[in-house]
Every structure is written in C-alpha cells, then in structure tokens.
Image (cartoon, rainbow, N blue to C red; front, side, top):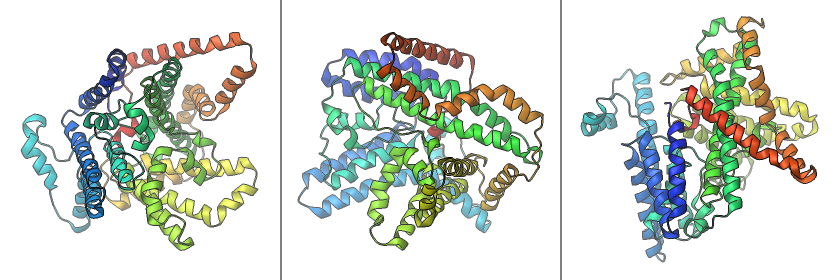
Length: 493
C-alpha cells in the first residue's frame, strides 16, 4: 500500500516538538506516547489497537517477570506468552492470507480465512466487507521492537520498566514507529526516563532530518518513477539496457527511500534527546555479500543475530550446523519482509550466497582487485532486488513467481537482445542527472569532503552548510506540494 503520510508528518512534527519542548520533564514521554498513537492512528486508525495489544502484552509480561524473579518457570511462561502473542499477531495479519491462498492453490480448495470472516463480523460497519486482511503499517517493526524487551528482560540484560507510559513511549516513538530503525529497549533504556536535550543535539537532529527528507523526496521518489515505468512495460518488449536501467533505478530508490526515512527518524530522535542506532553504512560500497548485510538495515541484522542466530548456536557448533543456521536465519529474514514466495526466494538467495562466501569464496574475494569484488557484489545485490520487487502483489503460485523473476533476469543478460532503443535513450537523458546524484550519494565521498572541510578548510566555508540544508528543505517541500508520489517502501513491512 502507499501511505500518504509524508505531508501529514511534516505538518504534525512542529506541533509535536513545540509541545515536547514546553512541557515539564515528566510530561515528555506522554507527548511521545500521544503523538505516536495519533501519527499511527492517522494512517491506520483501527489498527492502533493491535499495537496497543502488543505493547500491553509485553509490558505486563515484564512486570510479572520482575515480581517473580526467583521463579524460573513463571519467567519462562511470561516470555513464551510474549513471543507467541507477538508472533501470533504477525501470523494473523501478515501471513494468514498467503498461507490459506497457497493451500487453496495447492489442493484446489476454497477455504476462507477465518480471521477475515471475524474482521467482517466485527468491523464491516466501519470499513465495509473485505476479502483480505489489511496489514497494519510497520507491524514487523513494532512487534520486534516490543518483543526485544521481554527477551532481554528474561536474559537479565536490562532493568524492568515499571512505568506503563514510559514503556508505551518506547514502542510508539514518533515517527520511528512504522519503519525503523528497530530500536531495542537496551538502546534507549537510560534515555527513556532521564535524557538531556542540548543545542548541539537539536542542531544535529535537524540537519539529519533534512538530509533524510532530501534523500527520500528529491532522490528516491524521482528515480523510482523510472522503475515504475519499466514494470508497466511488457517483459517481451524490454531489452537488456531497459531492464538494467529499471532495476538499478529501484536499487537506488529502495536505498534512498529507506535510509532517508531512517535518517529522519534518527534526526527526530536527537531532537528529542535520544540516540537511535544507525541503520545504514553505505551498503553499495560493499565488496562481498556478507559485508553488504553488515551495512544494510543493520538493526534488523542485529536483531536476528541476537534473537535467532545466536540462540540456534551461531557458528559455535561446527561448520554443518553453522550453514544450517545461516540458511534458517536468511529464509526467516526473507519471510519477515513479506508473505510471498518472492521474499522467501530473496532471503534464501542471500543465505546461499553468504554460505558460499563463508565456505570458500570470501577468501578469494579478498585477494582479487577491489573493483571486481565490488562489481560481483553489486551485480548480485541488483539481481536480488529483482526477486524483491518485480513480482506483483497477490501472486500466489511459486511457479509464476519464479518464472517472472527468471524472465526478468534473463532479459537483463540478453534474452531479448542488447539493443539500446528509444526507451533506454530517453531514460538516460531524463534520469542521467538523478542517476549521477545516486551514484555519488550512495558512497562516502560527500562524507569525506565534509570532514575535510570541517577540519582543513577556512572557517567561512562552514557557513555553506545552513545554506545547503535550507535549499534541500525548500526543494523537498516544493516537490511534496507538486507531486502525489511519495510512497515509503518499508511501511509495507
């Protein structure tokens, strides 16, 4: 779905910050809680209660664990209830339709999702009859975030949060609530009840927020339009240059969209006195698939490492078990992104590549020239994005999903020829500048230039930063007001 909350966010944000700064210290978490519920409720008013239920389960489980610290069975029961209820909510809203549709397709049945029937009985007067459960925005993010609290509390890595308001403020941190980064409780437990807001933090937060807004609005939305155009064209009419230009456009779109939103969330956190974890570290500079996943969506990778890979045994139980653990983690990573065969294929694809690197290829990549190891990585990542986004929503049959992916990748490597036609020429002319910006912006060149200016250049050059930031902000606002295309891709997860 396309969540049109960007304009609402920009209008809502100043009001929230003004209230946040003027209320007493004890009232700041209340502002965070209320603003988070309002922001989430504006996009999904009915599903606010799903988030509240998830939060209530984990808060209650934590309090019971704390009161029964000397009773291992009670503590374990609380942990299991938290995990089962959170994963149950994910299963119902995110995966039940896909599972039942797949069963129907495999066995020629016509089973109706019982949760759809229940939803229609309860809410048809509000939303009308539905045939598929609408998915709560960002459910994979806030359930993982909330669930990390009970797991770490069970492990005695964190202190119990006795304030219901403070715990709900942690879960509903606006606008990080719907698309990450995934903030674990241990990341903010000290700041949640005792944080300071300095001028430097506010300034850094504003700068980071504007940078993220520019990445999303000025870069991701523009280059993404090319990918939409390519997807709308019949596959049989595309040639290799068309296919490569289209999927590279998506490669840049998803990076600048998601990293831009993460920048906005991190910047807003700084404005409110929080230090959220980083989520991206120039992943398209990677020289192996393993390195790419250390740089891409780092909070998700850290979550799965802490709560799935290590509990499975990690790499401590020999090579065969390590391979199995890696394949499990990456298949689950794919499933986390969506209830569709293409996401499972995508996750398994990266799991296999990482296993191959771990077995033998990783050492070989270290010995070859860095350009070739980078090229190997970038090409395989781009192919992965075909699996991720070229399959239309609602495609149930595995053969259809695989055929569509295989067909597009085949076109990329010459199945329809290598002719550079009018489509590719027009794309190069129309998107040449934004592609150049994407290439530069996905590397650390600008970061290194900025560091050099701050350290070595004359002081008067530093006055250029506010001018650039103001120009980016004004251009972003102008683009928002003149265009209706502002999808946040990861809101769907």
